Image (cartoon, rainbow, N blue to C red; front, side):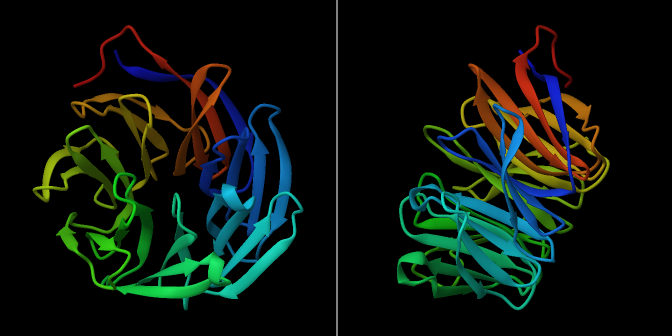
Length: 308
C-alpha cells in the first residue's frame, strides 16, 4: 500500500538548510540560513533553545548526543560546538577555506567529518581537542554531502557537484571507489541497507535520483518525476519508503523495495532542503526543512494504489 502524508503541521521560520532528530529527546535540530541554530520540541511545538552561531548561513548542524553537544558548520568557514545542557560554546575554529556544506558524526568513535566548497573533506577528533587527523582529497568541485556507512562505519561516502559519488576508508586519504553518477552535480546521498546487499541513493541537479548497487557499482534504478534539482533525500529507517525533495517545491514518496513512485505533494513552504523522521504518539512523522520553515506530517498507509 502506498504511503501518504497527512495532518501536516507548518512551522514558519527563515530558510531551513539542515535538520536532524535527536535519538532520545523530542527535539529537531534546525540549521537556518540566517546563521541561527534552533532546537525545536516536536511534542510541545516550541523552540527550546536558540544559538546565534554566525552572521553567515549555517548549512549543517548535528547532535553529538553522547557529549550532550551540537556541532555546526557555517559559510564563514568555522565549526562551532555547543553544550546543549549548559548552552555554552565549548569550541570554535576555522575548519575550511570555503563554505562548510555538510557534517557527519561517527556513531561510536569521537569523529566528525566536514565537507566543503574548498573541495576537501576533513576528519576531526574531539577527544584530541578537535584536531584534524586526516584530509580526504579527490573531488574537483564543491563537496555537497558526507555520510558514514551504517553497516561499515569505518567507511563513508561523499557526493559533489563534480558529478561523482566516492567511497572512502577512514585510514586512507584516497577514495576506495568512485562512480561518475550523474550528468550534473550531486546534492545529496543516503544508504539503503538490506539483509544481503547495500545500495546508495543519490540526488542530482539533473532532476533525478539514482539507486546504486555498491557491489557491482551499477545504477539499478532511476527515479524520475521532479521538475527541478533534487535537493534532499532520505531513506526511512523502519518503513519500506524513501523520500526525495526538490527545488520545484515538491516532495515525493517512493517504494524502497521496487522504487515505484507512490505520490508527490507540494511542500507549501517552497523548496525542500532537508528531510528527517521522528516518532510521536505511536505514529511515524516526516519532517521537511524548506525555504519558509518546517513541515511535520504523519506518514500513513493509503488504500489506493500508487502511480507507476
